Length: 323
Image 1 (spheres, rainbow, N blue to C red):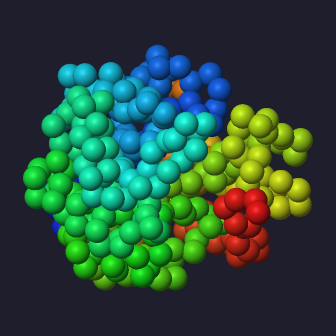
Image 2 (tube, helix red, strand yellow; image 1 turned 90 degrees about the vertical axis):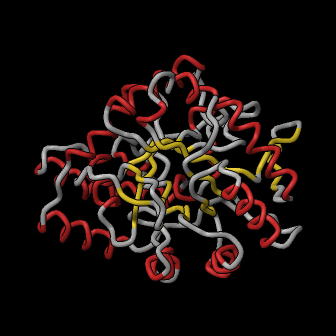
């Protein structure tokens, strides 16, 4: 994989082709994630060449992800690009609240900057549109934060094409963040072409399908109530077994290229047309280091052909959440 930093839109912000998605470090969906573990995981990712750190105001009930990043980047702020998100917070009882009101957005951004110990974000996303207010209201506030120097670039996450266009009509837009992986490629039909046409970078999450495409799960795998994956159809019943069949087809390719399956999947994702940066999660320093090895994985024509046929044979995976 070419390690050359890639531009975010038409801005001066440059990100590594792989980024650390810092939601798992909040410890809300996995057990055993202490502050020390989170800090060491971020530090390990940076040491391994991952300079793009993606977090959010709501990654943790009290900013656990941002606080871990703050500790990990002491003395190395200039080595990293920090992307934050605003517009979602937690209510008592661990209930998420989408709130895109301008005053709420500004409050969250100011708090995120305090938690991170920095004066400005490199990239700031609206985490999700608020259905109770016009999207243009939220976009207008992010535009004002950009003008005020609170961020160097603005993005939007979890949107439709129409919402993307609405946002861009009000605020200079540099990036869009949505899920994408070998089996969930819906953004290729409309979103990616629009972004490429308008100079908007595409940052994607779920490249490893919440760990499924990392190649380590077994046929007997189960997920406790504390693990959010039990809610997703991709990890249940026949759908889960079909996904594991697909992963089995990736093992020989990875072995021939002398890399692990996760590295193969991340490297493939990062080279797809229109994809600027690929976010992976990690819950330990070791996992961050292993996933960063994808930077050393170079696909060839044979590998790409076999992967394309495996994707064609599998077809699209089931939706994001159980009904």
